[in-house]
Image 1: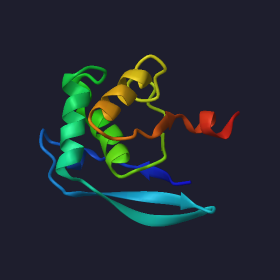
Image 2: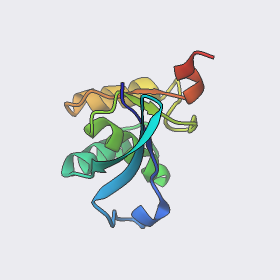
Image 3: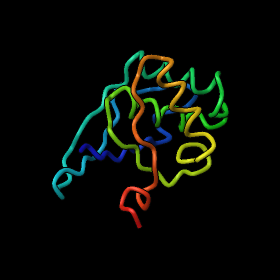
Length: 118
């Protein structure tokens, strides 16, 4: 199981993405490892679809990129406390449908508490 914490800083987004990789940390067998995820054209395309086709409003572009980076890089889970636009029971099916329509398998989106079953 890959559980990745993706930190998307404001320095990455000033209207346009200024870096091509995102630094992340990976929790694997109770050890935190360094991991770099690719920021490809597919990431941009999926993020754009999430913004234009529905669930993520344009003012929350960073949320669309958060979902897109996790999806394109094949993460099994996307853990977040962002229940406004990401771990939202109403929006989640729409997010998953757009990912699949674009040809990608979305991660399971949930809060850390949901993953732990508490």
